Amino acid sequence: MAACSRGFANFKLGRFEVSVSSSPLRSADGIVLRNRKKRKDRVATSRISCCCSESAVPIGRSAGPCNSVEKVEEKRHHRVRIQANAALPFASPPPYFASKQDKFNPRCTPRNSGPQSRDTPPKRDTGIANEKDWGISLLNENVNETGTSEDGCTWYREGGEDLGENGYRCRWTRMGGRSHDGSSEWKETWWEKSDWSGYKELGVEKSGRNAEGDSWWETWKEVLYQDEWSNLARIERSAQKQAKSGTENAGWYEKWWEKYDAKGWTEKGAHKYGRLNEQSWWEKWGEHYDGGGSVLKWTDKWAETELGTKWGDKWEEKFFAGIGSRQGETWHVSPSDERWSRTWGEEHFGNGKVHKYGKSTTGESWDIVVDEETYYEAEPHYGWADVVGDSSQLLSIQPRERPPGVFPNLDFRSSPPSPNNDDPPGTLPPA
Image (cartoon, rainbow, N blue to C red; front, side):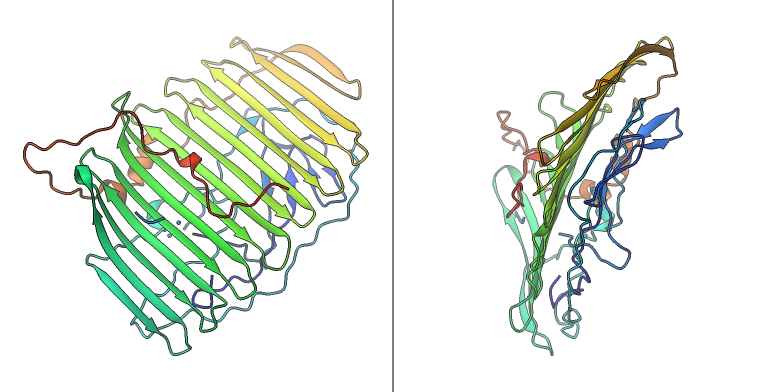
């Protein structure tokens, strides 16, 4: 974070990997296209990942006013039945992104007189952490303190309570620190909000910067409220993370969201973007469960280099009661604008018969009906009961006492802002 926080060793983005084909396709960029098959009713898992070397500590972790066990991204399943017959050409040399070691001083230790940052740079692809992993602890009284440690680091800590209409209350704590020369700093804010309508919110924002110009920002929030149309309780969780290198043209950004209601309706998704010198990559995915057995899942991911090479993979599946469809496309464009693509599809009739079809720009095609068991996930592996069990701190927020005869003034023209519509400060621009 900063000289006043625990350092982060290497700002290092690793190899970019896209699962798109059943035979491994490796580019000179160091980018691998392959289809990883998973023996679970013959379902293949498609995912995109950026890996860091074991010696590197990836950038970033963080949360606005009024901390994390990694959560592995949920796997989205689909099937790719036809194997690729030819390797695809790639032009540029393997990427190498290994900036020099960031030299951080130990975090400020003001002899128990001030706060110490528990923040470290966030990690990529870790999803939304549970509240217990954030260690949100609000001060019980108004505080406004500042100080300087023995090594010259300055720190501050403040907290308070804001009140508003309809029983609105926001309790908050803010703290931070800065190195003696101002080259590095850290900041974090914790808050909880409530009002008489039953709305409750718990959140964190963290940010930091080091002497070499590397910076990071992260926010996490979970909300409980009553849906104005269904009158059902809903819990929404979201996280946003970003990090930038101060020495190279590299960085990444993630936005995650999860929504749940008491009848099993669930929505999950993520948007991701990253850049590593001459390469850029994007990924979007979503899952929607209606609570009655209907499921929609989709993924779209693509990448490009400054030389003009582009490639990607996308798929979608829809199912209900064993009947549904899957379809997808894998594509590639060379620097000379030569294009290759393969499209595929499956129709599942619910009687053990599956219609499979597809074609590619190289002339291959297929259209067959086979006997095959249909597999899909009709319910999320993490649902309403799970999120309620992991939200004890959110549920325990105590609202202001309401005077007799006073009722909340509810505004049904608007609802709490959706987590996936939040925009972070300084979002990385597209390539």
